[in-house]
Length: 101
Image 1: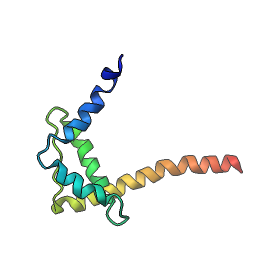
Image 2: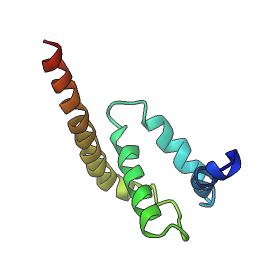
Image 3: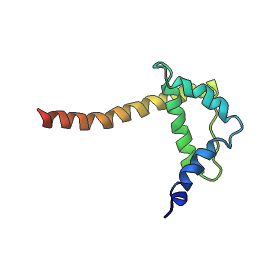
Image 4: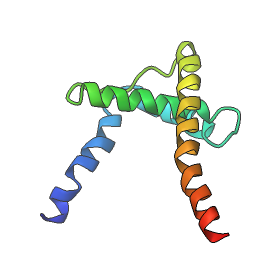
């Protein structure tokens, strides 16, 4: 397997974002929100919807709306994603700290 074949799916995934006509607005608004503690959960939840759409319809993939109407849903999903991330990270930290003591 050569270099080009290995990264074909990755290139396709990144290119799929640009198929949406308003993709740059979503990146322009959502990207900076990741740097602020009060707003970073919204783009985090938005990624859950992106992943859900990519899984359910890989050939007809398009980015979800980033309208204010959906921010509550994205905020909830972002909170769930954060809790899962902390939950999966805290177990190894606790185990390693107990082994080290």
